[in-house]
Length: 142
Picture 1 (cartoon, rainbow, N blue to C red):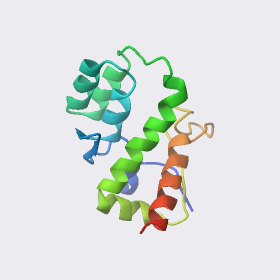
Picture 2: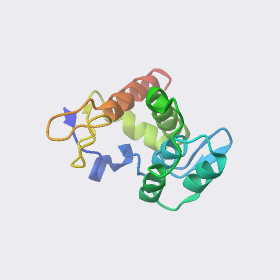
Picture 3: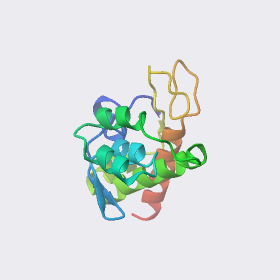
Picture 4: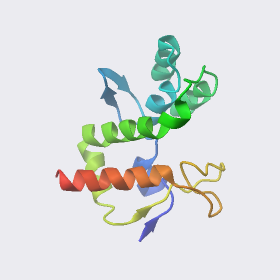
């Protein structure tokens, strides 16, 4: 089976899903808040992003910050840290992720994100692949 959209029943897989977690003693409302805040080394910008109400606001602010030099080489690592923290610290979501079984997880989208997801059948689906890695990790450590 393939899950090709992180909406509806599978909205918990989305980075916009409210699921508070902590990384280095700082709480983040969503993975999007965490990920966008890590784009910059400026602590004031990080805090501003971390504290906005919605993930869409976090994404918008993330496009306005001074991007850290090595971002393109580290963005996948930061996404993994955010996702792993989300699912390790929210046991109900971890169970839901495990309950997707062996389904292929595809972050289908219509906003042309072909790095993290798939749009019109094209994309690397990096987000989906990271979620499947985390699912395997959670199953092993159940």
